[in-house]
Image: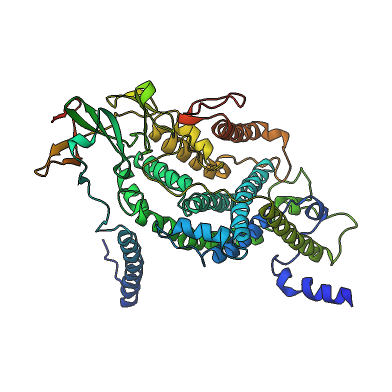
Length: 152
Length: 379
C-alpha cells in the first residue's frame, strides 16, 4: 500500500476550498437563523378579561382576543374562536346553536366539537380563573379538557 | 432617411448578440412564434417599474399599510393607475407564464437539449406564484390577512418542519407586524433577486439552444438525432429578417403596455376592508388564482390537499422532460404520438380550472355550495 503524497499546493488548495464553502455555507446558515426572531412582541397568551357579571347568559365574543366567553347560569367557560383547520375566526350562529367557520365550512357544536369537517380537532377550551380583583383570567397556554368550567 | 434610422436602431450588434453565429431564422420563426416568453418578460418589466413606484407610498406596517394603499387610491396623483397596472400586469403574467408553459408542453419543446430550461421555466412559474401570494398580502386588507393566516397554517401541516417553517415565514407565532415585514421582504427583495438570476439562466439557455425546436426544424418531422437540421427554406430568407422579428417582438411590448393601461383605466384593483383579526368575513375568498387551492383545502386534511397534492404535482411537472425521453413530435403542436401526455396535461389544467370556478362562483357563506341562481342567506 503506497501512501499518497500530497503536495503543499494541493493541501493549500483544499484548505482554500473548504474555507470558501465553509464561509458561504456558514453565512447562508447564519442568514436563515437571523430572520428567525429570538424575541417576540406579541400580546401575552395570559390575559385578563372582564368581571363574571359582565357576561350575560349565552355566548359572548371577545373581538381582540378571538375567544368566546360562554355563561350558563353560574358556570363560565372560555372557548377559542380560532378554527382548528386553518386558523380563521369562527362565528357563533345562535339560531343554529353552533360555531361556523367561513373559510372552509367547518362546523362545531356548542361545546366546540367538530360536527362537519374539514376541521379534525375540536375548538380549544382555555383555563379560566378568577383573580383577586374579581376579573376573569384566561390562560391560552393551558387548554383544558371538555366540561371543565368555572363556577362563580 | 427613415430606413437608416431604423437600421441603426434594430440592425446592430446588440440585437444580433441574442443569437449564436447563424440566425436560425426561417418562415416558422417568422410566422408561427407566439412570443409568450418575451411577453412574460415585458410584464416583468412593467411590474418592476410600477412596483418601485408603489414603494414610494407603501410602508410595511400593520397600522399604515392599508392607509398607504388608500393614499395611492385617493391622494397620490396617478397612484390609482399605477396600483391598477401593477395588479393587472401581475394577473396577466400569471396567465401568460402558464400559457407559455402550456405552449412548450404541447409542442414538446422540453425535449433534449432543452430539459433544463423546462426546469428553470417552471421555477420561474413558481416564483411568479410566490410573488402573487406575497403581493396580495401587502395591502393588509381582509383578503390579504386571512390568506396569510390560512397559508401559514397549511404550512404547519408539513411533517417535521411544519411548525418551524410557519415560525420562519411569520417571524413569530401570529400573523402580525413581523409577518407583514417578511412578506414585504420576500416580495420586493428576495423574490425579484431570485427571479432575476433564474431568468438570466433561462435566457442564456435559450440562446445556447438556438431558440425553439421550431426554428431549427423548420417544421420537419423526420429529423433524427445527430442529423443536421434541414436548411431554412422559402423566399423569405434575407439579412433583414432578424431585425423584422426584433421590431415585431418589441412592438408587442407596446401592445402589452397599452392593454395593461387600458384595463387599469377601466377597472380598479380590488381592495377589501382593512385587516380585522377578530372577524373573518363570510365567505372569505382567496384571489382567483388561489381559490382553486382553497376549494381543495375545504375537502379535508390540509396535509393531504395542501402539502402532499401540490408538492407531488410540482415534482412531477419538474421531472416531465426527464421522464418523457421520446424523440417524436418535437416542435409540433399536438403531435399524435403524444396524445396521452397532452390529454393528461389538459386534464390536470381542467381540474384546477374547475376548482377555481367552483370556489369562485359556487361557494357562499360558510363555504356552502350554492348554484349561481340560488341566493345567499342574509344572516
